[in-house]
Amino acid sequence: MWFGTTFDGTGNTGDNIVELINAVQGHFIKFVSFEPLLRDPVMAMPHMQYLDWIIIGADSTRGAKKPPQKWADWLIETAMEYNIPVFIKDNYGYPEIIKEFPKVKST
Image (cartoon, rainbow, N blue to C red; front, side, top):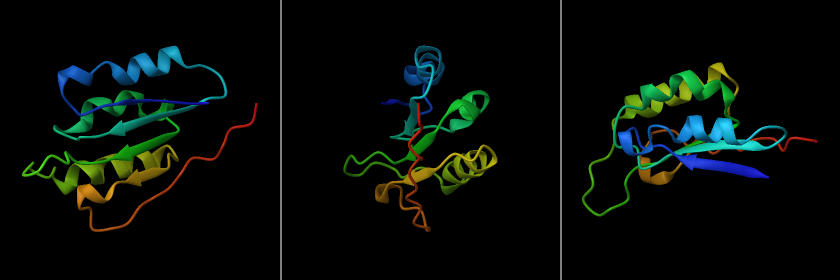
């Protein structure tokens, strides 16, 4: 099974990653959708190593401001440190196409 949550960088979703990690144990895929990325995601750093996949996206509301590229850059670099696959949605406007998926875990 795959279990995921959203994290947008605001206080509204600030505890989501910790709650996901604490709730999901064993051979399950844990993923976080950093979408819509509204603020710098650096507060997610202490928990990234426990994730199996991250998705990065922007607010798709008409006229919404696109997040800075440096936020995605930071998430990608951190994910690479922990060998976490990254999927960037087209709505982010990131200059590179990155659409990776996690490997299915065996029980």
